[in-house]
Length: 121
Image (cartoon, rainbow, N blue to C red; front, side, top):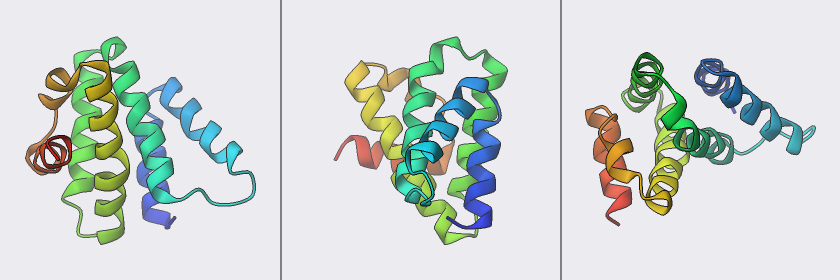
C-alpha cells in the first residue's frame, strides 16, 4: 500500500469503531506483511454493507462521500483500490444480502457508475 491508500482506508475505517476493528483484524491477519490493497479495501467494503443499517444518515453520507472522493482522485492507485476492492466487494455483498438497491442509492456518480458496471456484469 502507499501512504495515500493507507491514510484513505484508515480515514474511512476511523469513522466507526466497527470499521476500524475490521481494518485492524485485516492487518493482524497479514501479520508482518502488507495486505494486498484489494483485500484490505474489500474487507472494509463488505463491513460497510454489513453495518449499513446501523449507520445514521450523517454517517452514511460521510462514508459514501469519502468513497466518491476516492473514485475521483487523481491518484490511480487509490481509484483502483476503491473501485476493485471496496466498491466491488460492496456490490457483491449487497447482492448476496438482497440490499443492493438500498446500498446503490448512496453512491456518488463515479462510484455508482463502477458499482452498476460491476453488479450488472
